[in-house]
Image (cartoon, rainbow, N blue to C red):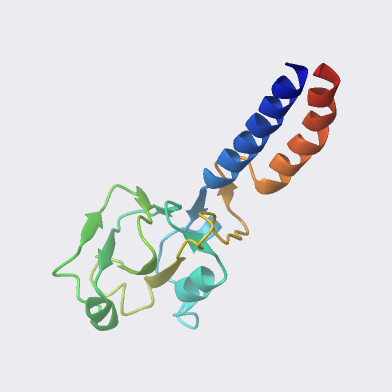
Length: 167
């Protein structure tokens, strides 16, 4: 009976750590401190450069903070042409949270006249999940919503001695 109890607790600990890894999502603040605004004249690639330094995964969220502006998710061609007439998504609340609900590319532009042409647009690439059910993930300057793998590993290291002392 003691061996069964010990085995059960070990399996339960592994399941807990695995679940914590899978539920790891991140929220990114677009443009960080500067928010979603027209970039300086000499930095029209500001948002694309910002996004290219991040590692986005399915179910991560991006937060657009802005004043007297809007954000649109559009098709690739509309992104290239700064065409705001057919958005897939539109918001002008000043604090928009957008969930990246699939892998692939997302294209965002400002809906304010002339802002996209001045560089207020961004391409986000969301990585696909790997075959093991986990995801490759790295996020700098972001808010972690759940526990990371490192914490799970520490949990196992400190929980195992306790589990075996119960057996």
